[in-house]
Length: 316
Image 1 (cartoon, rainbow, N blue to C red):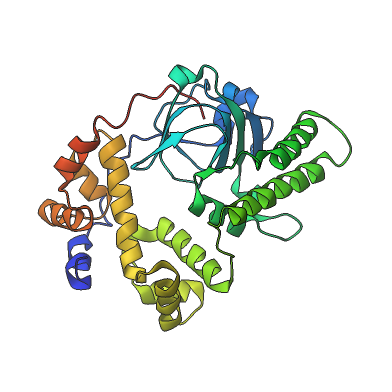
Image 2 (cartoon, helix red, strand yellow; image 1 turned 90 degrees about the vertical axis):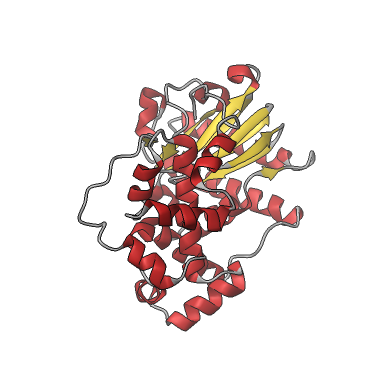
């Protein structure tokens, strides 16, 4: 990765200028219109949401869980192409770019879509589900074994009854069933031997990643991140290296590379415009930075993925 001095000097002086707006749309839960009963928690059959009038690819400003009970095709999340098969669960965080190619416009696909607003994910009687959601997102996609969906299906069926009903304490029941669904999915991961328990160090790593998502263009130093997290810089560095195998600065660079990949694949902007959006005022340096992290210059990377993405069919 580039040195601190080289990286900081290349990005310096960009904050006073207005960058062009990205063309990848970002949708909120309200984008589903009357089909969404709530702007904080939305639940629907997958086969209905695949035909929602949303432009593909796109981002969300909410968490999304998609359980494909039956389907075949591909799901592109950022620059990664994942195969879709029966009983696969995709968990997406706010800001991820995704695109579907399911069963020729979704014919025959079925399953469930949970759209979860940040407030709903954060607070339930003073408790936060965000760490559990984050651990599921980190493990996504989750390919369930044939014996695992039974309990999940029972919970989702009961949640659906509450969601479409009007019984007393309905919201409390939705909270309970959704939390149970997350716990059951988490246990599926444990059974699949892919889950790591969320401890204090993992929680710190998750908080750091969230701050990086919010501030990676600002070129904050590890010391500044440590101050925001109210921990010593040495503790932050040791924890990040132990759990992620990389330094805090490397994770910031990784996040910039991820956004660069997203824009190169999904955005029609020129490479110069993309470099500027990401805080680089030197195109040649941006190209060296990108090639250092991906082994391909930006132009070659864009060409390589041009055929990997097919035009989306709209939907969730």
